[in-house]
Amino acid sequence: MARIDLRSDTVTQPTPEMRRAMAEAEVGDDVYGEDPTVHRLEEEAADRLGKEAALFVPSGTMGNQIAVLSHTERGDEVIVEAESHIYWYEVGAIAALSSAQPRTVVGRRGVFGPEELRAALRPANIHYPPTRLVCIENTHNRAGGTVWTEDETERLARAAHEEGLRVHLDGARIFNAAVALGTTAARLAAPADSVMFCLSKGLAAPVGSLVCGTREFIARARRYRKMLGGGMRQAGVLAAAGLVALRTMVDRLAEDHENARRLAEGLAAIPGFSVDLETVVTNMVAVDVAGTGVPAEELVRRMAEEGVLANATGPYRIRFVTHKDVARSDIPKALRAIERSLGRVALGR
Ligand code: TLP
Image 1 (cartoon, rainbow, N blue to C red):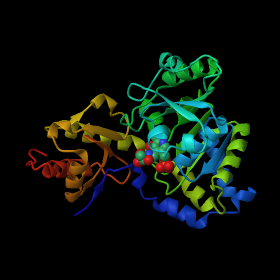
Image 2: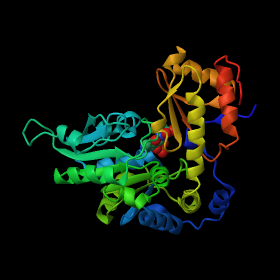
Image 3: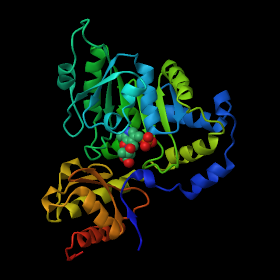
Image 4: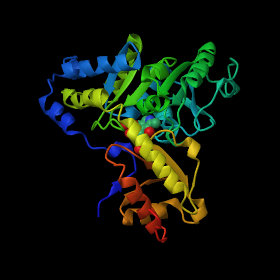
């Protein structure tokens, strides 16, 4: 039985062009600053994101945490959205690595404004931690791949800067946001002081993310990357695939978005499943399965038996992610398999 893997866009396989580029990459020791392919990737990434400089890191998690380390000091406070990746899925690293205190703000579909930000700030007082940084996420993973528009980002960042805070953008899927909004990643990142984006998700590179910001910020970030053990040697082998990802894999993300839309509409029609279709703007579908009475973990197990893989993201919540290794023709197949897994006869598809 062919598997349709909708757990994440991280499961994407490198393209033949990436594998060729990796085999042929010109490399050197990047800790000595001697890998020409890494240099090229960092330059192109900085350019694409409209920032002065960039740093190649092994993962999005390391990239986000290097950014937090570079922006903060021990005892600072960092404002994060309550459902953000940086808060939920990075193993408590803000506390463990930066010795900073995260403070959550509840967004609407992952987005919050100057009002919510200001409500979380406290005046200077010896009892309070200094608030230094605010982190936002575009696209927002747990909200279902929702986007921050240029305007929303600009408004939030302006307020943050007025309050003396810096802004870090977790742009793991910033190119999905740019494609969905018909804009560029540089425009979406312009108001932020730093941005992290991933090559290893919808762009299908095997490994790697970039942190982008000012030259001075990236020099600090480079020291923290070394401290965390992320100084890589002949990393050009990986950067070569990253360059192919950046140059050739962005525009096709629109196909993933169309497939997610089709999938969402099909899932919304399944009795017991509930999908907020307004959140489906990129490559994710978050489904509330409470109406089936079956816990998400159990449903995910049953779907796997029918060849469809997805992730439980809450007691009654399942996330589906489309990507380049899921074809348009896989969507009706996946829907039929999901219906079978619910013990229902698929009709009309
Ligand atoms: N997200 C992964 C899991 O960790 C949940 C996924 O499958 O979606 N920021 C955002 C918004 C992310 O979604 C992710 C990965 C990261 C950062 C971390 O990237 P990696 O996995 O490279 O450390």
